[in-house]
Length: 359
Image (tube, rainbow, N blue to C red; front, top):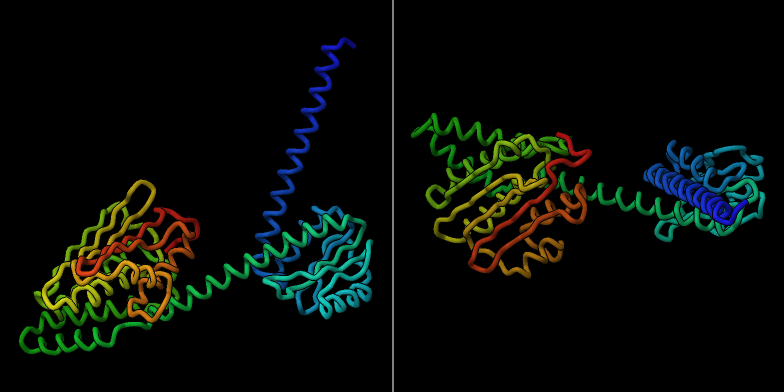
């Protein structure tokens, strides 16, 4: 074979090996990603069996089991003798240290330094590979626990927000309605329907997402009632682009912002004030702003409120900001522009479409 032909053959072989290595790496990463998704709910769910199958393929062993704290092992491949595995797992759960030696070992799994379960491996494998797989599993368990905690916190905050209709607002609204029953019964009837509509939406159960149209209808109802209470002291401008009305957003993200604008911006001001609410599309984002020309606040105080620090009355801002970040990620949330005696502008920016956000 000539030298050029020999070099060409070596390059072809090298390219083939690289291609195979790339394909294998891609498969490994894809399997690891699926395993992480399947472990989001922990080791005690049926999806842990699918995770065990993926881990067995990664380690290329005869059998692999994932065990939760109850001692139940979910096997993939050929299970080891039950009595032997049971004794090994029990030992690991009590000592939190690795037990056994190839071809049968059991390794503790931790989540935030707490024992979460046991990984059982049947067959010959490298301990370094086992350590790497343990790291993947523990990372997946910690991520799942973190996301579950964030979701539970968001749901708890939403339940609290639903129950947080200001007694002061309820009293004032009903007082105004009662005062109009004889002098202007038609107006009293309209306001009572608005109040019922406001209460129905604010206290609706089992709603996680809604539409921009529904959120804007809710704040218009609230502002109608507040204008009846505050009379000439409150002026309102609400504008929303028709093309964003059907966009899905988390439930009750606008009303707390508008309530804060009225309660903490306009009401304490003494004179009259303007609340403006605007919703429109900017590129691939939905941008909604709530602005008032009231008292405003120190920017450092606004930052502390968003961070959930201290005991502030504007808890709605913290609640909305946390829920937006939970749904859309840390890049999204509230932006507050304010200064003392210069009013406040709160901006909500979220994607026009987000997988899983459906009314």
